[in-house]
Image 1 (cartoon, rainbow, N blue to C red):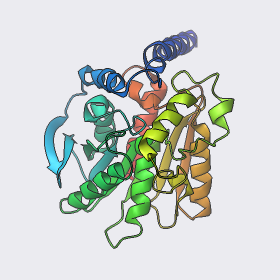
Image 2: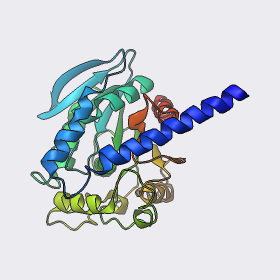
Image 3: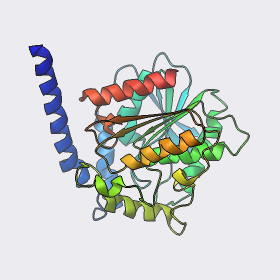
Length: 299
């Protein structure tokens, strides 16, 4: 019993330290006063994070879209991974370690696409790149899951809704981690969780949304897929932290999907923040979340 209390204390301390580290190193940078170029350079420093063992890393192209292919052993099926970064930052470099862990747990090859970013390439560039990559993957894989975090989660939704309107084979599953699916930022937790979110500030989201949407209304379904047609979407797992300003996006997505008849599971991780799965090498809740993603994608 004493050991379990000691272990719980260690885990609590580790989580508190990481929470503070995220605030100091990340929240200060995800700020409209910091240039997009600087944000990109600093986020891409994550490329130096050690990769998990047993992953083969390859650079390929999917119909002209530069892609990082992460191959575990064994692997069955594919993941089309759409990285976060508010549509303005992020890359295969910044997300490679986290995606590698997901791929290994799911026993699937992961394809992390380097889709075009705003403000240089506003909507619909990201959706167009994702669609091209998905169609190209269909020539190699029959079982493709869509996975994305933050803006990448919203992009996965927008892509799934686009695919559902076509005759192409549908994705087998979808996983959304802390998805940003309402770029109007109208969710209640945008304000109610502002004081406890250690990573995101509403001003950064609204600034990024304006760059991505450009002259297109923010409530356009391709930009804010929460307002889209959710019929015929694949079974979906949503993970979110209780302390993030985007909590209500996940809650509203889950409700909208259920109303549309989509097989949906919402997992809220108490005391966690935005895309906490990044910390699977250090935090037990993050490892648990990645494990649950793997089990969902195996099913």
